[in-house]
Length: 215
Image (cartoon, rainbow, N blue to C red):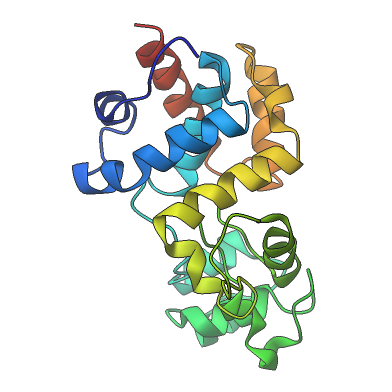
């Protein structure tokens, strides 16, 4: 990149963010962007758009799952086939996590509590035990005894919240989608989200980032 990412850049790209949150993550983003080749305006804009949406403009690094019955019924119809079933889980985040994340991605059954333990964390919301394990195996520059499987809450710490996003980006070779074409940005969103949830917000942040970073 021909520029250094600054707090002022982030303030314009994430207008709903707080200064405290921007400064909490900025230096880690700059540091790891150099290491993992997010080194063009197109790449940085795409990266900031995706982490910006997933983290609520740097305000959330841990999935809350505090859904109403109506929202559960709309977002997770596979697991809550009727509104009555959804009402049994409404506003019970731990119970919801254990329901929707059970028996997949290395998680145990609903009663294991793995769904809650390995819920989404970090700026790109690492979710499911297998992904925490892959991240744990990939990371090398961490203090002795730093275990992301036994202590998944470590991904809420600023350094690891950022690093886990770069891990996912790097291992999935997401720089290949970082162009000025929206069709590529759509592919990027699918690679991260598995679908297109929040797509309009992602695109808005992306376009704002491209504009800010080219000024």
